[in-house]
Figure: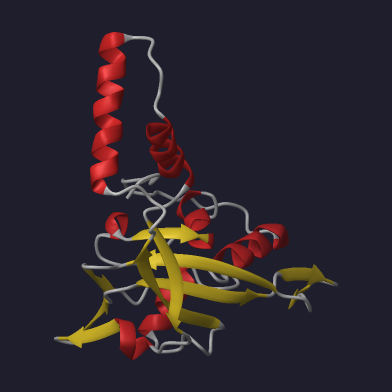
Length: 208
């Protein structure tokens, strides 16, 4: 997949002072995160936890250059390198513009509010993410606030959207919200922030 960034390694955490501000930041980092989502999947409480999962289907984009057009563009680029300055034909300019400005596929929501049983399977008492489509995960997030020494949820939510790409692969889901081969499960949107920016240890519990 183009424009993809992967981080591979082991995360280490150390104890810090657990002030109210730190607790608040952790609560908001966890709520709606990928770990939160997979814990909900494992517990069969996705809807109860506020997640909505939709099926996304990819369709070829007719405006994106064909393989033949891309080969013509490549051949012209090689010829341009060898000959130096030369006029670029209009059809080559058009192919180049469509390659830059269009995506190979368009996407559409083809099923809404799918249940855990649609995208998981259980084998030998192990739960697996097993789905042939791209998944859209929406979460209605009410940020936690600290008021008069109490943690309360805001009254106005923000809709956060993430995408998972399990297509053609299977991942075991663990109770702590992690998966097998986590570096190979491509995600987009809000979930990407939790990889580094708002990373929490896998034994984190809301309120810690």
